Length: 275
Length: 275
Image (tube, rainbow over all chains, first blue to last red; front, side, top):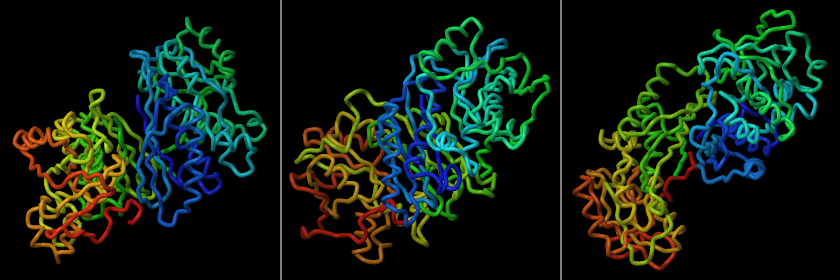
């Protein structure tokens, strides 16, 4: 399996990022895509676009962040390209291996499957705000691809996606690909610690949790008969897992509040062409 | 084998390119890398960066050029990414297959090997000039990856590279990787038809031929015992092939004129960070 993703200055990172964070994030967001496919990462290529007058020391620090992420997750940086560009950007291609027939896809979810979500939501979106605490900043700048979880879910989950654009939007992708609907319940969503107190209002909390994006958690559909095996991964991998909703025979992804009311968070999730 | 390369507006293409040319070139330059490795192209990923206010009709024409190149060379466009960027750019990753042990590399050339060059040089550099004829414009905007030649040379050539940055510079890469030297003779180089008359001076001709770049021809080192088999490909593939020099036990790539004098063309070849 292969995936490509780009991070560009002024769009995906800004001057508040340490250069090492830029390199880390450029690779990590690709590894998250491999995780969502249940793949073992093999190697990566990096196409670097460098603006005129770029500081070589800064570029070298970007490279160190890339290398740190590669070491951490056992990926070989096998090559790449350098070219002039109007702004600093890194376009990383990551290659991974998965046993034949075991690749996780967005399609395959069936009504009745339960939705399993790793980690916590909203931290990365919180990290984009001024005054965010260190843990939220780290979540946005140094995402942790859930590679071990993805590989363990291959063979258990019926479909999987990583939450990069916001929960509702990514769940919508999974629903469309699978030809199903889905419901999640706000009360069942794992939120970043402290997010409840930090949110400006209930509507803000819903927006952060349902449409925040960049958390790079995995969202998997799991048939009920395999749920206990999937939940057992929480202990083995030391990663919180939570049942956050279920697949329905409807169409589209729906979020519901305490009284079953449909929630429509502000912001439809990450818009790739908005910034 | 895998390769990644980027084309960006204002660096690798400008407003004189038809949008279809941009898409074609973005993929073709990657296929040329696969050709130089002797690989059969399988599929490609395209990461598109789109500036604010980009014309959708123009993007669609870029996509048509990409698709035309993919069809022409039997590549599947398997996926990609779209993100906001400060200028239009396409970063294409191409994946190819080659039998184990048969991949052509830059290393492997040995003293005594002959240098075989496909097609003609200087046409693309000529195409960057005002008033260039249609054939030169086409060479610069719609490069033709030498895929069939590359696959045929796997098993015959000891090393190979594509001439993307200029003959002397790319030959220098091959020499460094192989730990050898090389000599080419200007009189033996195949030049684009009409280039001799179009060049402003002898020095200009040398610069176009030796340092012009973007011709995307293949330059292969071939052991003398396999030369006749390699040259027979000219007829089979209907592609001109010429012996343009030889590998030496020296260091670095040297070009020589009629009287054996060393030529030092203006411009060291394509500088990836110059534009």
